[in-house]
Length: 601
Ligand SMILES: Cc1cc2nc3c(=O)[nH]c(=O)nc-3n(C[C@H](O)[C@H](O)[C@H](O)COP(=O)(O)OP(=O)(O)OC[C@H]3O[C@@H](n4cnc5c(N)ncnc54)[C@H](O)[C@@H]3O)c2cc1C
Ligand SMILES: NC(=O)c1ccc[n+]([C@@H]2O[C@H](COP(=O)([O-])OP(=O)(O)OC[C@H]3O[C@@H](n4cnc5c(N)ncnc54)[C@H](OP(=O)(O)O)[C@@H]3O)[C@@H](O)[C@H]2O)c1
Image (cartoon, rainbow, N blue to C red; front, side, top):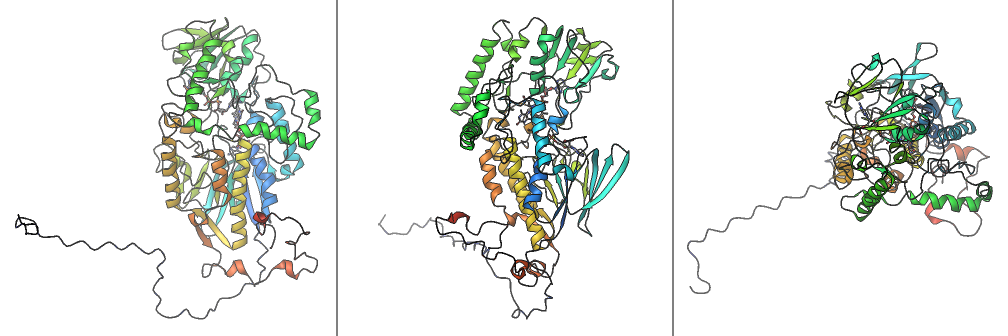
């Protein structure tokens, strides 16, 4: 064939389809005629006089206390009421008084950032010392003045005409119903507060003492008694280790295997109190010494997040280390270690430091029972293999309702949030935007809610970050003439899809049940922020206002109420300092210049 001859069998050249034009996100809306001159009524108000906001917080555990301290400091003109069903503050640390209850995070880490206690007596504080610490904070910062104790919130409902929440609380002392209206409701109800007993047949027939660990009977002395402990989560592990030396016998029902750690971040725990020497405590009167000490301990809790990723070297190392520890410390009971090492990787559920636990379960007075429980009887527990074991008391360390569905009705626009979130509901899991709010429920915010804290850092730090972003939202609303605000469904969908994809890379999505996944192996992770603790802090620092839907007080013009009459109250006050932005000649941190929300400039 000649070089440029035409192949007669070749198909005629197809016309190229026109390249699809990329939509222009900046397209101007068509305008028929020039914008007419405004007839807007200028409002007689100063821009720097924010609207009074009535805010209800539900719960006065450490999260509610942090809200009670930080919201009044960060949100001008707030009217704050905190509803708490208990008789005092503290939540977890008020309710859990079982023997051995203590924090598995060092005391100098598990505390607020702004009110450190330099005088913790033990490296890992016991429950009463933690409770006293948070009570002191509540007292010092006037949080008690905001709290309605003995008030259990049973329902909240949104009035779309007035943009208000009605909170219905049961006054437990007077057996009456208390009802009040708020602009915002903020939940701080905890993740483990709705504790639950198991529902085995015959449970009500048991004649001995039956208690959940979160509902401990302080008058009961287990010494010399025959005891059953159901559950090998952190509470069960702690209780077993602490009561084993003084009970006659202990039947420990541990239906599944779990990983028991020596410590988090290398700070080794011990069944005996690890007292902080007086000399060291005295040295903390020097603020520089204390800050250095604190930073060294706390810094470690921000590291190691990468160990949660599938196939990571850190995960491998942890696995080997935990197996070695279990083998070494259960060596006196051959065969036991096989019953302890789980099939799922460490970090799939929260690791449990168990000082004294291996030593307890290898003791002669402990029965480690993996057979499933069939029923309770009047005198004890029968397992599925037909064995009946008599006991004087049964302690259920069976955890809480961890589906994170609020235990009260939250009604708005004909929907009830618990119904949407519950398994089988329209969402079927706690559907949130960044863990702080949910579409369709305006002016409702969550503290330490679903996805509310990262797996690194500390709970108090995560709570302070959560409260701060809530404060930013409240400030925006009260300053800018916003009646109602809720995240958009698109933003929440994107967040959930990111979270699913993120957790898929980690061992949290492996086959284990935990409070990260509603106690259902393999189901969606909603118990943690999808990223590290530091990652969450970055995201919350600058709220993405474009992800929210707004209803304005002045729908005709978003600036009408906000801008007011065009000048500030501060400048007409002859006593005010209008030049706060000026400082003595010298270095200025330019990053902070004009970034302080409480200043005009
Ligand atoms: C036994 C135990 C030990 C723990 N140990 C550790 C640990 O070592 N390290 C760690 O990081 N975390 C630990 N945790 C997790 C612990 O719960 C959190 O660290 C933290 O205390 C949560 O505080 P919170 O205020 O968010 O919740 P909570 O302490 O649970 O407080 C919630 C409050 O809300 C109130 N409330 C709930 N519903 C209503 C309602 N309808 N009306 C009115 N009030 C209501 C409750 O009464 C309670 O006071 C532990 C949890 C438990 C159960
Ligand atoms: N400072 C501490 O050391 C400490 C102490 C307590 C709690 N915590 C924190 O609080 C969280 C909750 O801990 P938790 O121990 O109270 O609860 P948890 O971790 O949810 O453990 C509950 C335990 O009960 C078992 N269980 C539940 N229902 C059962 C049933 N019907 N029959 C038999 N066993 C049953 C579970 O077994 P399966 O695994 O088989 O479901 C699990 O072993 C922890 O994750 C931890 O963060 C920390």
